[in-house]
Image (cartoon, rainbow, N blue to C red):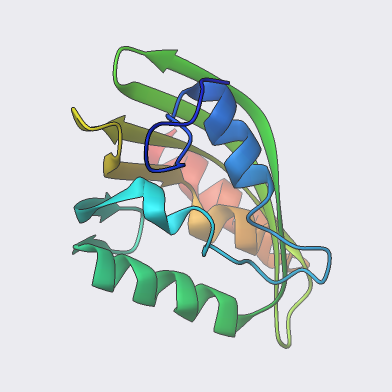
Amino acid sequence: MEQENKTGIIRLDAESIRELWSKTYNTQGKPDWSHILPYYDESIRFRDSVQELRGIEEFTAMTRRLTDRSKDLSMNIVRTVQRDRDIFIEWEMTIKFKKNPSSVLYGTSRVTLNEQGKIIEQRDYYDLWGDIFDNIPRFGKAYRRFMKKKFG
């Protein structure tokens, strides 16, 4: 991991991302992004399977919504790789909503650093519905058959 800069913030690289993101989820299963939000640029562009947003205020609000909706949430960082200012993170996120069984989402994130070393863009890739439906008896198999028939 690289050294801290003048502001006391660690310069991001693949290893520091792994360490920071691993600390995002506490032992009570509630995510806490307060330690990582300073690494995001004010004009962060974020996109995933269900939303696209811009700006640190919208991004922070999204992290709060995820915390509020989940009863339990944990993340396993499988690997991180860096090429220039792009860092790729492969992850497995286990989430339990208030009334549903736990679901594991398998995904990858690409974060792009700006010239100041802050995250200016984050793109998350995952199959939200497929991973959640896999945990619903009979429905998961039907969904996978449909997807294979339609797109396979």
